[in-house]
Amino acid sequence: MSSNSAQRLYDLGIVIFLFLAINAASVGCRRSTPPRLSFETTEESLRAGRQGEEADEARLGLLGDEALDTYLNSVGQRVFEAIRTPRVRYDFRVVDEAQPNAFALPDGSVFVTRGLLVLMNDEDELACLLGHEIAHVEQRHTARHQPSSNPVSPLLGPWRRAAERAPYTQVMEEEADFLGQQFCAAAGHDPMGMSTLLRSLRQVERIQFGLSRQPSFLATHPGLQNRATLNGARAREMTWRRDPRIGDPRAALLQRTEGINVGQRPQSGVFVDNRFLDPVLGYQITFPRGWVRSANNRVVGARSSDTGAVVFLVADRSAGDPKMRGEEWLARQTGDAFQVESTQSLFVGRMPAWRFELTTGGRINRTTGSATFVSHGERTFRLIAVAPSRAARAELRRAMTAIRSFRPLAIENRSLIRARRLRVVTAEPDESLADLGARAEDTWVPTRRAVMNGLFSNHVFSGGELAKIARSEPYESVEER
Image (cartoon, rainbow, N blue to C red; front, side, top):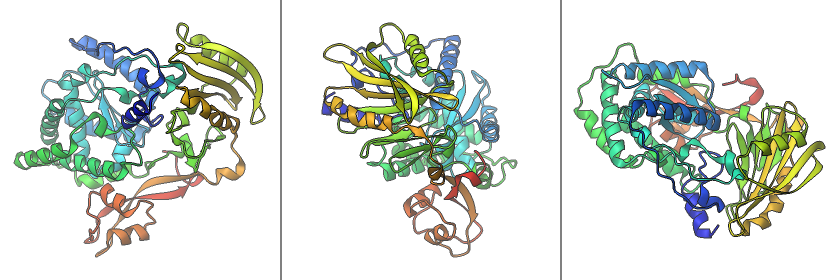
């Protein structure tokens, strides 16, 4: 992979696992661009939606918080009922993802990440967001913009994520904003919520730029700044009446989102420096220093920003003989996906393991790597090291060092695992944001604390207002959520 290609993919958000979309160009596969799917009938759209939903559930992972899903559906159904003749029935669920994002499928499945719920400041913003996603479905934007099916190296398959779906056009976004505000207002919510949410998203991205280029709402919903201004002006001209059942829209949202994990979710493992510790599956692994690290509820790993070499781990569902599990995995690959160069029995972390040295692709665009299978507890762990280019092959040694570091979680490391939770506190009279953060033990830096509360950094509270903070708490002492 050339340096220009690597930078282009990095700019598109290929920063491992969190909404990764590694296509043929990123791994040297044959370049081919199949026509993008276009669904003309409701039946085809629904069928595509169901297929897409299955893929998204498997790749993204739902949070599985029934209380949050019920709340999301209560707000979403209120907005849904504002549509006179909806095309489909809608279902709303929370995705276990720290990045702020939301997307809809043609069958009416709407997904909102917990990261976006943490960012929101009132129920009006949530209602406007759901109205926006509903509008995409009603106007068949989602059916016309399904993800492409570009070929991808089988070695890198687990990295593919639902965010490879194409971004909406500016016209589609403006149409969804307009209809979303109408749906929101008809449901008794303030349509200004669309503008305030977009501004918060824009500010968060500005804070993170240069630190995390993982795709988010910005990547698939372009033009936030101009849209925020346009939506704000439109909201001021709209006539609407507050639904009295909503009450205080800020309190309505915060009392239901308090306790959500902020950032890494300990139940899915956390990074402590360059080590990844998983308290549920009971393992630890150390990645090369300087590599870009990330994880979701399915995959954890790291990528060399210089060469594109990668190492990642997938926890399969069942334990068993490592060699047998590896051969079963190879048998599931379609066609001649891999060429097995060699195999060997070994020990990883004093646990029996089996390794396959693999190649895929042609002589010029060859991808090399290895797949190591280790049974630990009730799972078989698949540890993959990949060099997608000639330059990356020198980095495979560092990737293999990471694989050799895989072992059961040490007792002394369990105490290092902490949870950051969204907590709601009441501001005191004449208290500044800085003073509130110090009193409440907030882990957000001042600029992020202001953005996450939709306030300016120099804001002074009158007293009695609800404010969000992110508090670090011992993992064992907090309720799973």
